[in-house]
Length: 276
Image 1 (cartoon, rainbow, N blue to C red):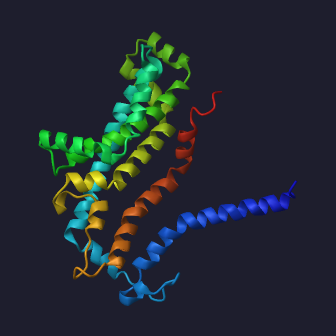
Image 2 (tube, rainbow, N blue to C red):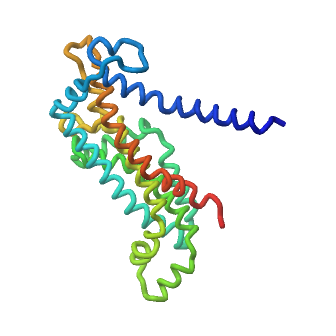
Image 3 (spheres, rainbow, N blue to C red):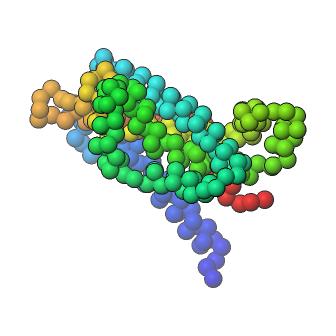
């Protein structure tokens, strides 16, 4: 067997490699966004001169702040609607006995397995038929396809592990199903709610294909599409500094949210994995 010191050294070396591989792209984007002019094309891992001109150029674009607001509004509404629908569906799937319950849960999960491109044409026809093309409603409706199945699955798994005695005591006290869900189960489900809500928010915030297809004006686009549409002073110029600055602005809030809620994310994802 390998000595303990060798195993620990190999473990920490592997962790270091994983951290470097995961963090380096974001670090390089940050230092690139701080480089001025021709320094963008110098391969260096520490900026020799620092400037905020790229950030000023991004924020001075009138549509970019509007795009940030669109992403924030759409992602927040997607999370709220997904959690509201998912927690009620999870209660039915976890606590109410009816024929085909397992098949229904697997069907809900299988919806998220379809690639976006496979449902794009059908969604486009629905959105055009409803008359919501180039509106936030189109993106909220389409984003529910990949956020709702995941939230239903996680919350159902979590709710199954809650003691049945709590629900029985609430029923004896005359509580309705909605009171049981909102006042009994929800306070106990914060780890799962934070996990699913944050992951749904990240998925909606980063989504590109639907946002590109279902919006046509700068004022209605979200930030991933806005970044892709950034252009230089001519058709031959790619504004890497501006693109990196915009990417950092968009990514930083997600990093902060994950760092703040990392413990709840882990506990929420592992909930129901081991039955006590």
